[in-house]
Image 1 (tube, rainbow, N blue to C red):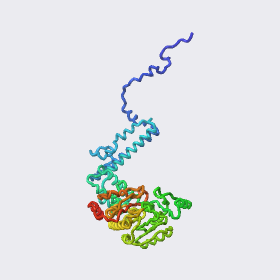
Image 2: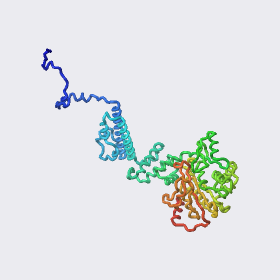
Image 3: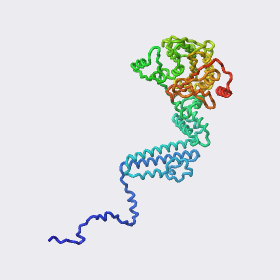
Image 4: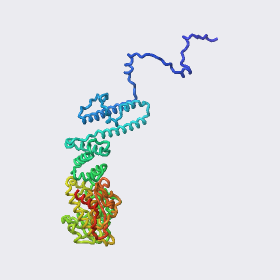
Length: 523
């Protein structure tokens, strides 16, 4: 027989809960908390993981930034109302803030920041990073909107006393933002003209222009394109050389230059003789455009009315392959010597060089198949080469230029041979971007002579103006081409190509056209 079992509870071994007990929940226990122990429980710090500590630090930093931002906005609002700035305690407690909370519509409230604290510590790291990136983007957007809302139009003293370039640059950006959505960001008592005048004054100071030329440029370009043009005009354009096809092919020239350590590239599909050369002070690509538009042929009789120093004329001679006759004229005798030297150096033998006033050339010689008029101008398209243009040109200079340009263009048309079997074409070009020297001059010629605009043959460039402010030009002026530094990476240029149909001089001119011409003259 075995041992006698002992069934008393004291000696029975204790066991764990049975399966049924494990499925049951513990009973609710009602008890009272000793207030003395509350402080001890609160003092106990919860152990956080490294990731949780980083998120908590970021949340604290964001909350401080929002408080500083609110304080700055409220102080500026009080400064505008001549009230003392708000103390920091007012921002934190948010007790004495006025009922007008329009300045904070674009800012998140405290609940937005506090709700971030509810993120779970076990959240996946990738999801956390994605959420943080989205939050930062939203906050940057709200900060931008807030900064736009608080722009205050400066007083006259503030406008005149600001001399720091960074301050002027910042104010230019603020004004451009206001003008981009004027209805939303303007001050109610301020007109658009006041903002435009402030922008013009700051741009004149920042880029060193006179107000006359800056006003003309602002009339040409929309605000979103204005800064691109002004900044591009401060940068030198890529250097371009033209291959003298009378002596060498472009491929051979490029290989010879590369073998000497020069980095060259073709200028583009639109030219088969141009090469871009880096770090070399020679003419730019825009000088090739008028000759390409003129498209000279062999055995023709061609006139370059304003030829000095001979770059475009030598290009014409090369395309003519030293056949026919090329007349290269310039009114300045000292500059004519430069044409002679360049023609000898380049091996041009089919040219005749003359020195006459271009305005009377039709009285000396006529019957040309093609005529090129690269007219003298204010040079507003080559500011990167000649920065003095920014301050030296005024209304009188523009008037002198477009008066001379009109006379030269009419004379050049009179020199054309209307019975030419291959020609009868004229190309007018300037290195200016002002409509007074470009579209207005060509529009004048359309009214005074029996000519029409034809395509230039250039497959790039911006169409010429048909409408410019209150002026209306002939619809065919969209066939002309404009070239800008910020869009085509070359000097500012204008090219128009006309064809002469008869020697008849029109006498009837519409009142609208005459009115536009008078307004341009007076302007």
